[in-house]
Length: 369
Image (cartoon, rainbow, N blue to C red; front, top):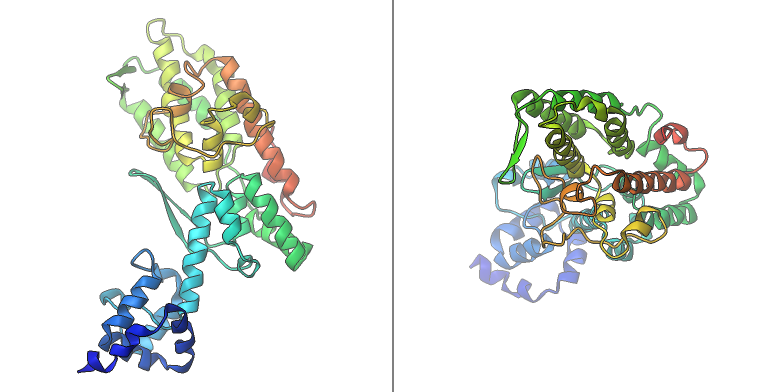
């Protein structure tokens, strides 16, 4: 009987649901959800992914508690607060587009009213073994962490035009606070080289890296350090290359020297690749105009699809797509290392130039060259 009573609700267009919520109390909405399958299905339709991350929406928790309901233990979907939920989903989707370098659709979707809203937590799954959490910041702040000038530059200009220069500076200071301190990875890479150079078991057989426990533990320690960083500092890439160029005399084992050198690039640089923003990965994966992209003369072609059809981030410990299957085949060569350092420094300089001159931490964000 109850479902028949509300059968006419099936005829309500989705757009009108946003109006209906204005005139219903939370209790009435809960009753509708429980008695009307049509409303429940419409509410589910509003949620494109099938489930919200309610942990970041405390106000929803409070409303459910007032109704004596636990949404985490039920199949109910919120019909009330649909505007908030719609904005939540939009921000999350735009944030995902920003993180993955899909600049055109990201910029098209961003309404000025969203510029000061906080992006919910996004779990970015780069591959089955590597998931990163991003969000808890504005869209502009999120874009600054990608190093993607074709996204953060227009967003910065829109914020400044809409809300003023002071708001843009505030967002930059929050993204790069004065207390933000970068870890010096040069010592880490120097130590890694010595550990690898002392490992006589290193080999590469059937696409599997062979190494002793000391080398394995050193690589795992590097991964843990990178995972703990709030921001992927591109100086890490320069430190990695400099450590190799200045520490190559550590490889003294005549029989294993080149195996050890190769492993440093395969595993060490492969580790860095996992944590790189998509914009950097797309630059390293450039196929159309690699050298001009590395020198900052040509925009990045936005693709992480490799020549073999796999994705750049479809990797595990010990696989560096750039140094193994990319433009740096035999990637220890100086001719391959120099353009990579140039690309990283150009990208850093672009970000630094975009930051307002009175960003409190501007000089320390990218101070090392």
